[in-house]
Amino acid sequence: MTPRLPCGPGARSRCCSRKIMTGYGRSWRASTSESKAELRPMLLAPAKRSTILAFVAAVTMLGAVLRLWQLDAQSLWLDEAFTARIAPLDVTGIINAIRSDLDTPPLHPLLVHAFLLLGSSDFVLRLPSALAGILCIPLMYAVARRLLGTLTGLLAASMMALSPFAIYYSQEARMYALLLLFTLLAWYCLLRALSPISPCDIDHQENPQGKTANAAEARGWRGSSARRWWLGFTLASALGIYT
Image (cartoon, rainbow, N blue to C red; front, side, top):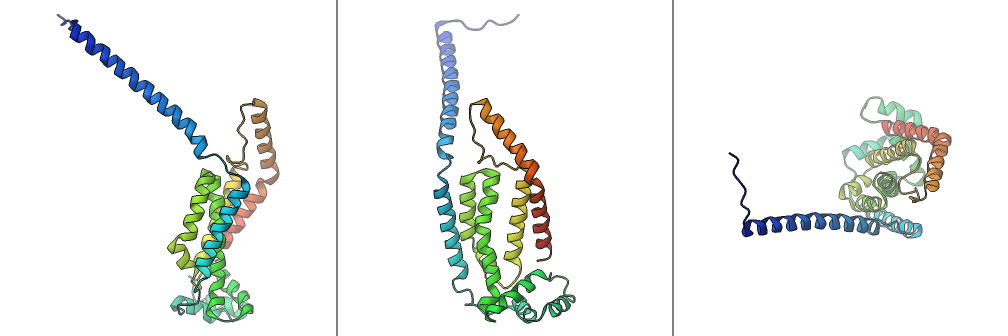
């Protein structure tokens, strides 16, 4: 025989309290979700293009100061000495010198060889790496913005500018900073080839005609420019391999 549930005044009050609390919990979660949905556009609202560009420029300048300051303060270490030894040679001499070292692709020594027109100091030897490290800052912003939005791009650029590891490798006469630059460039070209219109660039409108226009613009953009981004991805990847 199935036991009957208590139906006294106390049981009824407990049931009513439980229903009230359950309803309150649901309404609280709904209101919280609505408030988050309302707050998210306020937090991630796109700033003016001039403000964003000014911030990226300021962060890039800060990163440049950190990378160029005391660039030649430390003496060359073993691997940098190898770069200093083969960079003054002509192109044929550089190619012949790196044949015996399979871990040294030719692009970085050839780039340093071109910079030696400015002088033969330790500062000049490390200058290509420093410039590559500086260019990584706005490029990091572009990659992160394309993936996760403007705010993430600004944070990523700031972290790249202040990263001790990025600064350290930007002050070495080796290929590390240049490799990072070509890697980021390859990523950016790949993202542009796969997604021609960034989510941050699409004007989200409630008007269906606006959405149709954006979709048509995206298809037209893809048909006219995707190939050059695939070409850029291929070239950047090849340069990274030979750096």
